[in-house]
Length: 397
Image 1 (cartoon, rainbow, N blue to C red):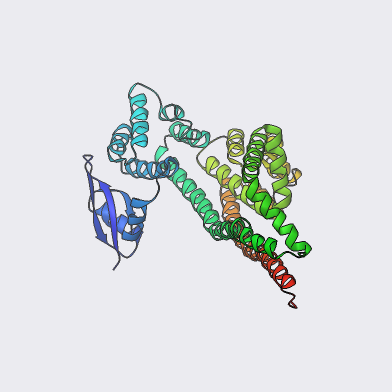
Image 2 (cartoon, helix red, strand yellow):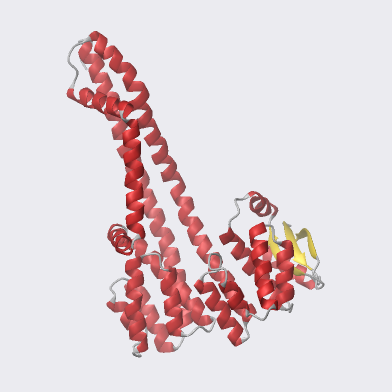
């Protein structure tokens, strides 16, 4: 039977750690609850080791904070006591300070959402508004549970994109380094030999030697041009007009992937907000804030206007010509049946799966293209060198 490591707290606030045997993670959680403790984190030993040595970030700490706070509140502990426990067990010093600040604000009379709003770098508008809706409806533990699901699904999607792009990135970097080494270290040695032997060189070799000598003599100009070009591009894309044009170009070049990504992100955010009791217009505004593409985000303004006029969201969304037809049909059915929030979550699940397939297909096409292009460049360099050698020694190629 598998063994799981766990971290839990007793009803008096003491934190305990240990291992437990169970068929799966859910069974381990149930066994811990039946033993009279509140499980905060349950994982296999391998996962626990990975989490111990992983690079920590405040974004991942927010997910941990949400998971543990949801568990404590669901067990019946009051909010201030739960936050006090989380402040004591937090492994990150900055996160510990933030939790203590939130707890201090609550004890001074602020609401939980207002206390979180003082830390916008850590807790987004979406997070704060969902907490505010949970406070208003007296279902904070339920909202935290939905927030936890939302953060986990978002993290899983991001991790998937990063994982599939690791190999193409390594491939491009290694091939680029190989070409630079050939041009700056190998070719200059051959150029000395060619100069001593004399004779005319093939045109391709002359071009290659010119490029090699230029890189070797003016590498600092090339490096400066690249840095300046990157800075100009970054500053341009930071401006409103530049970011919009860049997002428009991405939508044209990677239309299928961008549409599926933004559809999944928009529908999951809006569905989670509506399930948590956030009003539709406010939920639309919050959903707009989490969309990464400005072209898609701008279209949500017309959706909000249509919702104000009583048109719902399916018809205004169809007029944007951005969201896929299947998603629009499912959203329309959700409005007609009065289950818009549930249908939005189903749309998000559908397009998250479809996005994973699209990303894998894109990477599977990208990898051979990178190999082909880099292979042709390296082959051109090698063949040019061989042509020069054979021309000088009067050997047929």
